[in-house]
Length: 443
Ligand code: FAD
Image 1 (cartoon, rainbow, N blue to C red):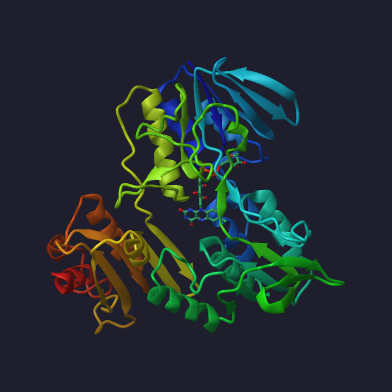
Image 2: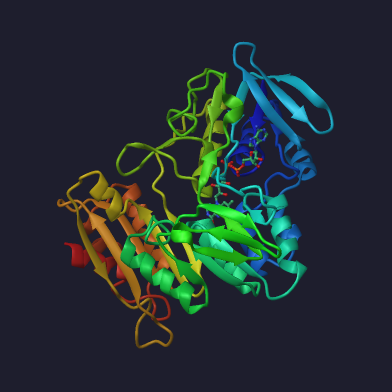
């Protein structure tokens, strides 16, 4: 069996490793258009801030490591530029070998998503950076290190924008974050996002809301960002982080069905519309675990799980993908925000009947030093079925949201939260854990 994989990072590399474990004989070739495979995309911002000091730490696996350990033929700087499903071949453009064809029995697509660059005047200014991969972060690191007392404008207050703003601030820059909406981090409802925004401002990041960028201007020194009503900001560099779009243009004319925004359409076996072609990761549409609707949620956990599932499917195991819950977490200076499931904005948009409660219990027993309040919000149906949760606090946010994520996975209701027996000693929690407390409040 000959299996080709497009994309050598989260989804692609986990599919390759799992497939090798399940099938010692298969010929596995992995194509990656960039120079590196299996790098830590999620760690990139922390290399700019200096928390991750060594660049080498970002390179989780090398082509040679993948070859030696898993016997996978890794071809970097090799871009798949077309797929011919009738002949079962792909066309590859390689830096080393030029353009050539490779045939497949099975094809796994994990090309991910690339940063959106809107077609605005001045968008090609070299001081505009996007953050996806190692070459991107090398360029940003070089700019940041070129001299002291620089300033940066981060455009977009999503996860990547907020992480970059924090890390540029940590690196000593004067940072302004411009967001088109009236809140940061849209997976959070406004009141929780507000405390994350406050934390950023307290750490000296300037925030501008409801401002859409109109264009960029080259200045004698630095770059100008034109906002609405004639406002122009200037800085030494711009980070553009307004979202991502699936990297699927090579699939035009392949017959593989794409959704409205270019995501690959797959079923619960990760099969695309074309036989023998599978797809995973940021490039696919997934089922929203809560609402059952089609959506796209670009997160590393789902990409890795789907990579495993596709390998299982190709090896004949019956594993399927049940949908994406959107469980996510972010560090915002000292604070942590985490969320799982749906939020109030989405429930309103879908015209659903729902209830919410918010509690502010202590992160651990308040008589034991160092506790702080956790803002914990729960969303549920009038019958008590849990739909989502969000939390913001200085400690213990991750485990509360993960507990509730598990409850949602198993179709739990608010009564289940009151019954969960969770680990407790004063340094960690209270005899009634915040997750129990919100269950009581919701009952
Ligand atoms: P990717 O990991 O992007 O891999 C796709 C690869 O395919 C790319 O390297 C690309 O070069 C290659 N490729 C594309 N087209 C072709 C082609 N035609 N031929 C050959 N190769 C091709 N998620 C979290 O859950 N938590 C986080 O904290 C988090 N932080 C992040 C921080 C940053 C800065 C970024 C950029 C992402 C972050 N993510 C995070 C998202 C996470 O990295 C992605 O969800 C995950 O990597 C998706 O995996 P993937 O395999 O679909 O795509």
